[in-house]
Length: 219
Image (cartoon, rainbow, N blue to C red):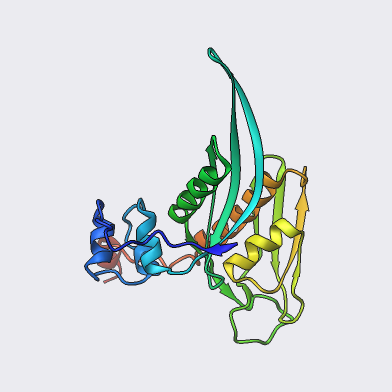
């Protein structure tokens, strides 16, 4: 685990979002994610979220038969986060372990999401955002992970892989339930990330706006 920084004084943004960040029109990750513009440059993430931590969750050797013979690559599963509401996840493959890790870190930064934190447990009276705002579930392959808000002081009732992902997201207290082949680290990690992503995508339904035709009828 370390704080990686892709940002470099020579970075020249090639996307509209990157230029907006470099010019200072967008200066927070929240604004970048809400802009509707695709996130395609890891340097952009480094500028908005400096000092991200990364965690290598799994390294596996993958073999494939080709016309030229057997090819061996390494698959690395990585999560990145600032431990304060932002988390990214990815897998990277390469002939060398180090290169696979760096690829995964770069892709994970492009998959960054904002996790809605709060105090979602009915047993809790804390005003500090230390858990999730609501229960959420994620699935990957045969694995399903359920994350349930818990009161402050409980900690993370989770396996090592699930705990690592939640900690990088800034979740300090939660109950978790895992189902399926949980020994498959890649699916367990991805299901946890998917649960957090589902939580980030859930929104309270907005009141439907009255249409012009409806307004004319009521007048």
